[in-house]
Structures are given as structure tokens and as C-alpha cells.
Length: 193
Length: 193
DNA sequence: ATAATTTCTTAAACTACTTTAAGTTTCGTG
DNA sequence: CACGAAACTTAAAGTAGTTTAAGAAATTAT
Image 1 (cartoon, each protein chain N blue to C red):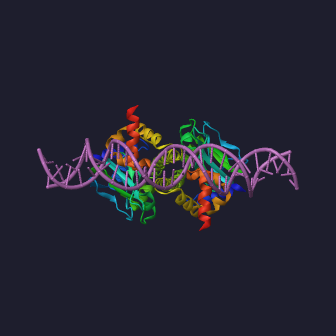
Image 2 (cartoon, rainbow over the protein chains, first blue to last red):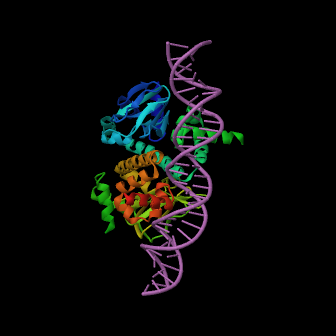
Image 3 (cartoon, each protein chain N blue to C red):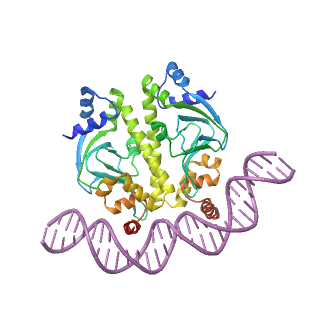
């Protein structure tokens, strides 16, 4: 069952006994969403942080010209949500929807705060998760500043080879910050070599 | 004395008693660096995370063409360091130097780990700090993807009005991901309005 | 104060990437 | 398995931002 996967994941960072694990599991709401369905609609308040047991989602914005810009992908074993909206319980900036049929385990803000109180080890768990995310984001910012589109694409397929297989090229382009047309040209140029 | 400032800052996030505060202070090394001096040289291992009591620093990279790209600024009441290098104790990707004469309080990785053990509340403190940093970085990534250079500049001076006063324009340009020449043109265009 | 250095400005030529548009391929659904 | 929709490709024209270069202004060091 998919509750196992999340405990296994957490045990890579902190050690939970059975009581703690069961208490944590009792706070989770399972949810399934189909491809193209929303996890978080425009301007909706993010009520839950979600751990993905199966599937793939994207967090993105739509600009004035109607173009989509992807801030992050999330696949199995990752957490997703609009953290700003979740923490403040105010409408967020990001939209989240599923790129594949997806299964999630969700925790509400109140329950997460209870969890921090009852099992403070989870402060450490989420600190470690956030540390990794922070480092990854800092590297992405640097690459967006210093790499060309081609360099960003090459880095992306090297860093996330399995993820790239699952994504449409237009999603990759929206993550790299280029148009699908230009990504197509980059790929043609690379293929010719 | 500047040790007060850091305790005051931390007490905004968690409540420390005198024993805990004094223990924390005992782990800190004060350091001062002058303008243009390095806090972290190219390929150096980041031995300390640093809390800034006075001054201003930048974390940046230099690309193959010799251009600088600023990943973050850090001023009073902020932490800085190359987190990846600090956590892994391997050479990092970022260079850190001072844009003004700067005073820091530093903590080593070993001491920070001791601190997490002895005063687990600090797990919470750094989780909260990282949460805020994560949200800010996610917004910056989104803006780099969806805003024009002019929009990014307008957002920057609105979000950090006091910081912009302290920075040379070329530093702002290196943070926004544009050339100083183009920033100059943007400013002229805005001034004419 | 003054020289030396760095930063800022301006403008013309250039380029990485976008836009538009049309055709082709792939994919999801009945 | 077929057909409608979405994704991908290609190419020509357009643009946001870069490069280069030179002069002006501001800052730093002596």
C-alpha cells in the first residue's frame, strides 16, 4: 500500500518508531487526480502539502500574454504545493495540475503544526527537505542567469534523464524558459552532431 | 554588542532561555571582512554559515566569458554561505565577497550539528528560515521566467528599496540577469516617463 | 585635492531567442 | 481504429537584450 512508501522515504532522514509513524499516517488524506485535473486552481488557497506516491505534476504561472511558466515539476517521492499560500493560508500565485494520473498523500496546515508539536523530529525532516530544495533552486537560479538555452537543456536532460522521458517537450520548454519552437531547434541542432 | 542582535533575531522565530542563548553564542566566531575581501574564494570549502550583523555581501559565479552572476545578496540579519558546500564539506560553486565592510557571526558544521542535538528548537528555527528563503527563491525563478528585464528591475526596487540604494548598478544588473548597459537604458527610459 | 580607477551612459551593430504561420506527426478518446 | 485535438517541426521575419567602443561621471586611494 502507498502509505509504506512515505514512511520508507521519511526514514531516510529521521528514525520513526511505530507509534510516531502511525500517528503521522493518521494525519494524511489520500487523494487521486487524473491527468489535466487541478491540484490547485488559480487564486485558490493551498490547504495541503502533498506527497506524491504515483504520477507527475507541475507548478506554474500564466503570464499576461497567456504563456505558461513552470516553477517546478514533482514526481514520486516529492512534496508539492504552493508553500507561500499554504503558510499564509491566502491565495497563492501558482497553479498546480497533473501531467499524469496521480496519487497523493496530503497533510493540512493544522495537522502539520500538531505533528511538529507531538513529534518534533519532523521539524528536522522538513528542514532537511527544504535544505535540499533550497540548494537545487539556487543552482537553477544561477543557471538561468549564466547558461544559454542550449546549456540549460543539456543540463536538464543530464540531471533528470528519466523525468524528461515522461514530459512533453512543451513542458520542458516552459521549465527552461524558452518557446517550444526554440527547443525544437536546439534538439535538431544537437541531433545533427 | 552585536551578539544581542542575533538573539533578538532568533527570538522572533523561537523562544530561547538564557542558558540556550548563551550556549548558542558560545558556538559563534565573530569575523570582520573589508569591502572587496572574500568570505568564500572560488572552489573553497564553505566551513561556516554566517549571520551578518553589519554590511553587505554577494554570492555569485563567474561564467566562461568572465561575467559575474549574482545568486543572492545578504545584508544585516540575514544568513549567508554556500549551503551545498557547507553541507557536503566539498568545494562549492559560489564565490562570496563583501560589497561593504562587514561584520559576521559564524558557526561551523560540527557546532551546528551539536546545536541541533542540544537545542532541537534550532531545527525549527532553520526550518522557518529555509521556508522563507525557499518561497523567495521560487518567486525569483518565476520572475526570471515570466518577466521582462524592465519588470524585474521595477519589482526589485519595489521589494528591496533600501538595498538598491546601497548597491552599484552593475551589481543590480548581475542579479537581474542583464548587462549594466541595458540596465542603464531601462533606467533612462523609466526616468523620462 | 588630485590622480587613478571604477562605474555609468550612450549609441550603433549584432545575436539569441520569439513570433507567426503553415505543415506534419503523435496522442487521447469515442 | 479512426478522427479530432494537441504536440512537434520548420522557416522567415521580428525584437529584447548583448556587444563593442568611447566619453562622462562618480568613487577610491594617495
